[in-house]
Image (cartoon, rainbow, N blue to C red; front, side, top):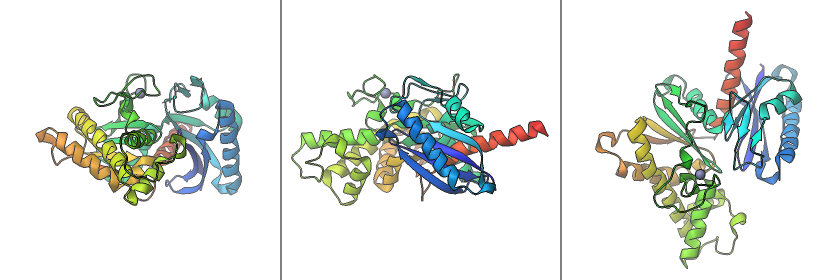
Length: 324
Ligand SMILES: [Zn+2]
């Protein structure tokens, strides 16, 4: 069975996967995005990873196309524009670069859209008509589905909800604004919260002697599991901030569910319960008890990989229809 190559580019890591038509992930490779100092180094690393995963495929599994989900990806232009969490210049012609190198049809979408399409594929026949997918990685991405349709906006840029302000924040964001939601609710945001808590208290913590760059969101999660009080408090604040802000989103779109995807969503119940309680508290009474907060997938975090693969499979199917 043929496969497509799906690439999920994130600020921390970039994941590559061979995905068949039934959306089984047959093989994966991962590279550390943050280890690359600039665009040239990133593409050298990415191309090497593509060659590595291609080299492991049997003849019948050969790639038919490449799907890429990336922050600030503009599908129509095939470029990544203004991705502040990536080591890129302002405008990167990623589709052209990849197509020229590997001579395969290559499609691009925003990472949050890929995750949203992935949730749609994973839920199959029971797909909901109205839902929101939040990707909690280095930043916060958002995909909104209304009546089964992904809302992409006038220029394919809808859903930059992570860059709307929250009342309690005076933190500077990568985007240049102050007080953006993602300065609290993202892998980087929870680190900022933890270090603020460390500065404001004398409480003992496993993080007390570490510097900002020595700590990962995953380690904060592990510490929370071990009942580290400041790690638990950091998750609590993150959940409260997101939940309160979600109550506003519910008032606009009235989704059936909010799905959390991405690295920070791996914290599972530690985060989700806080989010659900804080959201419920702030909801208008007409919505209370009606909106679920769920993880995008219980076992793995493959929504973006599946979604980026789905755009390639759809493209290949519609191209073959045109030819026949
Ligand atoms: Zn921002």
